[in-house]
Image (cartoon, rainbow, N blue to C red; front, top):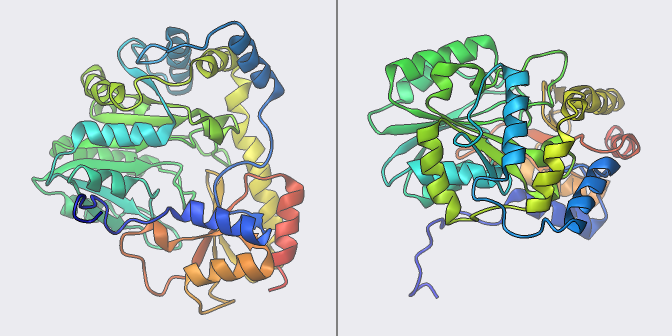
Amino acid sequence: MSDFIRSKLPNTGTTIFTVMSAMANQYGAINLSQGFPNFDVDPRLKDLVSHYIQAGYNQYAPLAGIPELRVALARKIDLCYQTQLDPDHEITITAGATQAIFTAIAATIRPGDEVIVFDPSYDSYAPSVQSFGGIVVPIALKAPKFNIDWDEVNNAITAKTKLLIINSPHNPTGKVLRAADIEALKEIVDKHPVLLLSDEVYEHLIFDDLPHLSILKEPALFARSFVTFSFGKSMHATGWKLGYCIAPRQLSSEFRKMHQFNVFCVNRPLQHAIADYIEDTETYSSLGRFYQEKRDYFSSQMEQSRFQLIPSEGSYFVLADYSALSDLNDLDYTAYLTKEKGVATIPLSPFYMNPPQDQRIIRFCFAKTLDLLEEAAINLKHL
């Protein structure tokens, strides 16, 4: 077969999320690796989906998504971020946020274009860039604070820099951008003709009363941006693979050119159900409190352990330094925890292009029921 095809991603294997979930299933381990809830979606939302299926809304949706959902999202964005959008030309419904990210990259990146990513980063960014001939320029966020060094960003920008990918709340670190970060980003777009891709899938999963500083709140930034979101994350339904991309009209036009030949449109009955569901603002405004309880519970259960938890400000995740427990690298240590201690986690090194050699950090997903978190902590805190 190598005579017929030359891999566009020769160094890319199966994603670590698939590997660790398969290992969890193989060894019967508690799965705190892949980022998905182990509890069901709201029964009212399921009833709405069923209603629209039974009512016959089962054929193709419009390319950009049904108007009812795009209008509902425009109202939501105005309420949350005081930004008025054109639902006809600036909002596109996608098959999850990962497809939105891939499509934004497909619409903008040509061979030789440079794309800045902040490592550790969600593992779809780099392969998506590379698949279109782009060059990934990784900037490492240093543990344990994982703050962005904006001087380093400025120094990394060249005449070939086309796109800068940011993510807040951040997967896998749980960090949230601050006002100083936004100001630094404004200075960059003022000086350089770069585009932004802002991954905001955990927009409502923020803790300790921190605000979500969406790119949508900043006109100078939004004018250059694709901003991606996930219904799966906000509705405990990651398997639905439904999200959306918001971008100014010109960028949305280019986005939709790629979108139409990728998936064309996405699940229609779910779109109708969600349009109704998000009219109740409590469905998303309460998520921060809901997940903070889980973060705090898991953290309290792990206090007696030798893991050093790194504070999580948002997302499904909390990082833990295990240097006091083992000298194994993180791939071997997560395999050990899964096979021998019955808890599957995620190593941090696959989130880097150039992993730090002396770093001993893994990621736990706390989007689980409290009883499962307690059971996992019992297995871990006696190590």
